[in-house]
Amino acid sequence: MQILPEPPKAHNSQKTKQERIQGATRLSEASPEDAPWSMHGSNAQTLMVWFSVGDEWQQKKAEKMEYCGRELIFAVKKNGEHKLKKAEFCRIRFCPRCVWRRSLAWKARWYGAWPELMKEVPKARFFHLVLSTPNVPVEDLKKELSLMNTAWKRMISRNTWPAIGFVRSTEVTIEKTRKGYVNPHFHCLVMVRNSYFKEWNYMTADTWRTYWASALGRHPEEMNKPFIRAIDPKLGVDGVAAAVREVFKYAVKGIEMKKNDRGDWVQTLLEMDRQLKGTQATALGGLIRQAFKGREEVTEEEMLAVKDESDSEAEKYLRYLYHFILREYRLGGELAKDDIEALEETNNRREKKKAERKGALSKPLPAELQASPEVKEDWDLNKVGLKLGEQDQKKQNRIRKLEGL
Ligand SMILES: [Zn+2]
Image 1 (tube, rainbow, N blue to C red):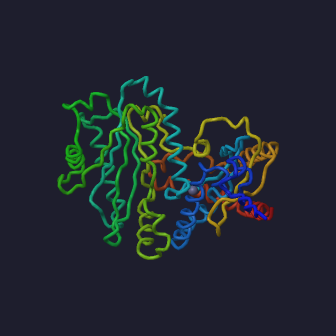
Image 2: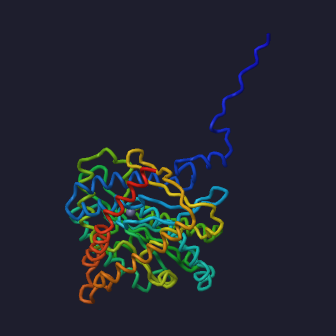
Image 3: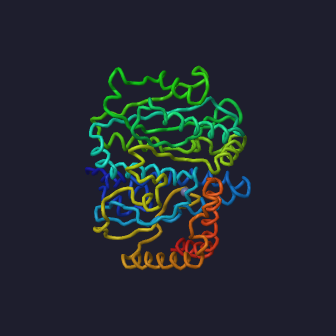
């Protein structure tokens, strides 16, 4: 008697993409392009733990980070495509989730501003420039950044300044070899006229080093060589948008590598956070400033909608929740379309009422305080702190209810 071989067992990889998406409870499977949510969520969780052992102010930040992106609501199309519809962001400078969304929002902004920029200067070229100073003890970071900012202003007001626009982000890395040393640097996307790339006009990395050193009043040999990478004009807006994403990719590097480190690195990070309080994170200049109407910060709305396609064909709305033990996003249930509309309406009403109640807080910062960015940060954080305190209980109840689903 002939024994027939057993039919092969159905294996995951044999399921069609559609089937995998339909049955997925992990966000990373249901929408692979949203997989970074879990990675950044996990890093944010680590950072939250570190901040929770910091000073009172940092503990407050840890509390805010706990709620950042905890619940995500996506509009889902028939083909399984997910579009983020609702999330709350803590907007803490180091928060990995917020840094990631901010960089995507900046990328999206470029696609919007591109036609206007090209109309102004049709053959404009762009390059990525990184300027730094020698590493400093973390206690001197604020002072060093202030010198760098002054030098930057001096540099861009010279008549030899070659750019017609720029966007600049401040990043700090922690030195690996010496304890408590950090490296502040400016990541810039610089816009120039096409003629900049002509031999007689082009500035090499060495020229940039001298140029930057003289603005800082230092000897060029003390300085690190700047990083320069020209964006290939053939790539058009895609090349520039990808570069601007690089500019905003980190506020602090290395979080993912230091998950188990509770020692000096964390102390340096906490001090770095204190030093950065009230310092400027982003700067815009020239035509780029004009194209973005001087808005140096992206809004929550921009952090949500980083893709411009509409969700009008949405078949359903899915809720995903960040799971603190699994360190990933899991499906938390489906929302009816009506529900989400009602939810939005309630949210708008609640926000409006709250703004009326807290009239003083919704007013702009008094003029005499506007000069100090430090005070502004306190003001902004207090506003959110209050908001969080009020919503705390309601949110926890809601989350408990959802987790029971
Ligand atoms: Zn955040």
